[in-house]
Length: 70
Image (cartoon, rainbow, N blue to C red; front, side):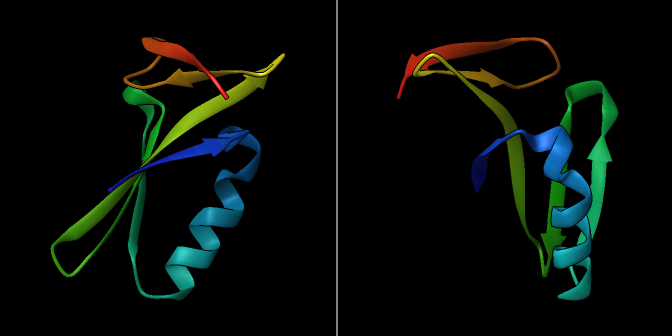
């Protein structure tokens, strides 16, 4: 599952703690700016997103990404 998270850098520690407390393995892949949360062979990746004047700026694999209207 892929997720989009606004202000991911500011919210990463809270996500890490909450999923860690639920028994998930949690890591941050620095080269992709991408947290990965895994448990029981399933995983979720959280993509960083910024809302700039009603346009979602989505970042995946580091500085590469795309934009789309909200």
